[in-house]
View 1 (cartoon, rainbow, N blue to C red):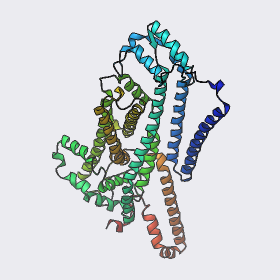
View 2: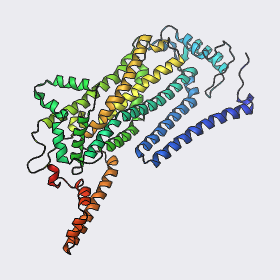
View 3: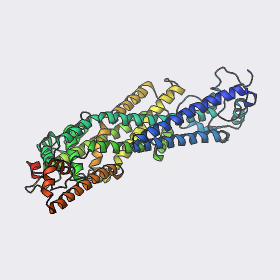
Length: 498
């Protein structure tokens, strides 16, 4: 079979056509991302726009890695090692090192011809096939990494990055869909128009508190953790949980404005966290290197490593549920939420001490690692299936492969519908709030308070000249309704406490 033609012998119309297709596809993808960014800016979704910029950074990193693999492939291919070193830490057993490398090099020629050419930007395949293996075998050496193996690594890194971005986006979107029912709970609270004292009395009566008032101190710590563990599988956040934790957040950070839209704040905060989740951190790549190192035949490392995200996810879910239970217990130990003078006592007291190492941010770091590792399992499975087949030794057996996929699906579903909603609300039970998300709402409320103060000053000034009574009689209801929800703590009208 004649040797394949190089670029020198390729018709120009073929070169131009292929390059045109590649450029057009790249431009369409780039303009689609640009239009998406403009749409997010137009809708004032700054956090999602920042996540899109983070995605572009990851794609740029991916392109840089691909470029390095192409540029240095000749250098890597020139490196030779002793043949005896190839007998250790093999992902598949059976073939000798020399035969295996010859098989990798010749596997690209399905028709058995010796003149085919394979290029990633390197030398002709004839030289690779005929010259290099002879030199390596005569000296008792083998190449460190073949051209075909470099190509497979190249494809795997690309599949891993794309899979992580897609699965992270799917997880967050499914979590947001699961939390849409919270919007109805928030709307119901807004329509009720309850003041803080009335809301506190309601919180004391709800099932969230009553369940934990009954014999909580007599229950062993193990039983409490068991209840927290199993609750994450059904109704991880109930209406009562939402009402109680919403009130705790409002009274801790924006006391005096009980009508604050807690749901919108949570969604904005979650969108901001999505910007962190969509990226790949440096320590994630360390995990990939460790996995590739221990992916030895007979160790079944693929299966054991797939258990790590499941175990972490169950532990995080139990911890977040335990925080809810602990907050409920603190409420249950209080006799009254408001004393006789009408001063409001904290119902749910947010604190960083509720979290591991007093750091709510650590939960997001662990969820990020879980999503990446789960994406890694998916990417490795489909990459192996496409490049080697289901019966390959790289699959580690049908039983282990199917078990890994089932575990990955369970992790994806549980994280989307339970753990992520739990994180979205429980993480705000810390001692601080995200000021970047909070800024818009604070500015709006400050403007409202300032307008109300100016109106009251104008009414008071008019009263000094005998017009106060007329002004008060003209707009009694508007002033009462517009200012009562913005009055500071302890300044609510007495009728609100009735």
